[in-house]
Image 1 (tube, one colour):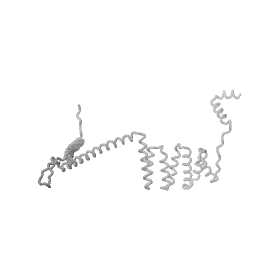
Image 2: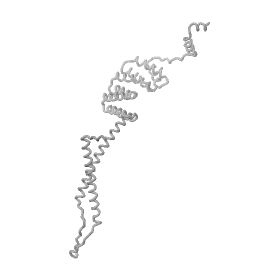
Image 3: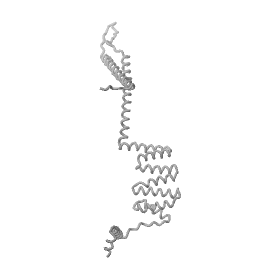
Image 4: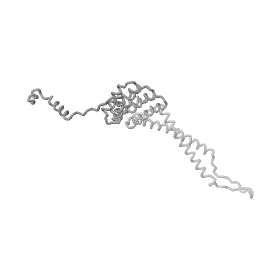
Length: 272
């Protein structure tokens, strides 16, 4: 059987715990014994011996008087050792539970979201302090760990636009956002915001017009598309709705596609 090897620090810790436990138990028992003795011989339970000195004076003597100072000394030592033992055990348990919590957080996908949320809120906290560039860096680190959290990328664009006043950087961020598969309304309104930047801040009206036509064409049933069409009308640009294919066109194309795989000699026979 292999011997249990302990380090010097572990041995000292064991000795320290043993002293605390022994001291707490010893002084606790001494305090209890003296306290019981004191309560038993309290004034309500005193045995009085009366001696008549004269007709007007009596002297009371108490049997088995308890030394009050010993009671306080044992009580103080018991309290001191007990507090020291409690703090030491509490510190060890808190360290143990903290290590377990960290392992659990890093091992659980659900709790990992909590850590990510804390990181996101830390970026927002830096933003409230006016540390805009630091907030952007934290948001970027958050995005690196959570590439699908598009709202963080939108926050970066907003900070560049409204706080840092770097409109080109804001436009680049919005362009990256539009590369994701967003819900139609969200994509459309993000694109409208980018169009406003193109026109009002970057002097890129052609890019804005091209993007507004795309919104109106590809997201035609959204409120953002209606807004894009209104913008185009105000700019004097006529937007033509995509025309529906005439009836029978699709069928003819399908027939052409089918006959294209038939050998030329067979097609010639069919035409005859």
